[in-house]
Amino acid sequence: MAELTKLLTDSMDHWLEQNIDQFDLTKTLATSTYKSGIVKSFIELLYMDNMFYPSNIFGELTRKIEKIVKKTNAHYILQDILIDNREYIAALLILVEYCQNHHLPIQTTKIQQLIKSGQFLLGRRVPYRLLEIKYQLKKAGFQENVSILNTAEQVVISNIDENWNSNGEDAYAITHSIFYLTDMGRKNIWQSSLGRRARLVLGAIATNNLFQNNLDIAGESFLSLIFLANFKTYMPWTVVRMFLDHAYKNQLSNGAFAGPDSPEGANLSDFEKCYHTTLVMKGAVYGIQQTYAKRYH
Image 1 (spheres, one colour):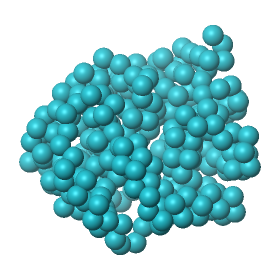
Image 2 (cartoon, one colour):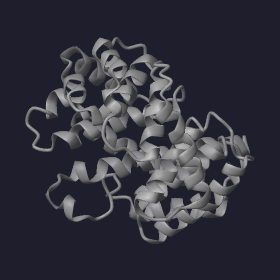
Image 3 (cartoon, rainbow, N blue to C red):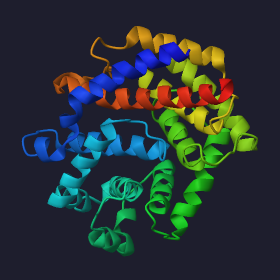
Image 4 (cartoon, helix red, strand yellow):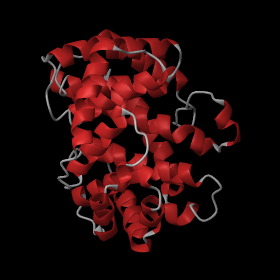
């Protein structure tokens, strides 16, 4: 298994190295017709780094990512876009968390004003998105005690316990809820009633989406299982091996992973079609490596 995860990782790292400029907003945003997607790719890169911090998931590539973040902050290019759209509050907070983790300068005056105004809570948001905001506020160092955010956590827990579907938005909501409820594996809820129920749900989501060749949701499911297991040895290793074998067979020759087919993807570039699933798979394989190493070393 160690050899297989290394093969997958080396290929993904090569693709990331070759495409790192595609994540650089100072180079891509001015000419792109898909601005929301370009911003999303940049934020997801930081999100994956934050997920495993202080472990260094990107290795030597981290220095290049830090340089991109410094350039972006210096131009205020990202903050201006995100602050104008209150839907992007979580993205702003992910940026702040990354800068704090890596000791990079960032001006947060406008962000603080946005948070104090409460305008980012306007509009309709599903419970797991409110849970995401609560989590990101805390990780970015903003201790805002907002009742609607506190209520959202209980709704999410209830939904996992009672209502779930192994496909689509339900699966996405459950995997991301586990990300936040476990603090990306830093908080152990494995033996709780929620943890026991979530294990069954996530196992079904992972296998169902693996058979449907949806590595996006399958990868996020394995990330959630890893975080539930708190990076210990409780993983369903037979299913993990099946996941890795399937990933190896479906990895593109350039090291990336293509996202699920959709009508919306017809006009996207190869990078835009691949970056999200590739980052998810990078996280899943890295998490499996970390957990496996703890089991056998």
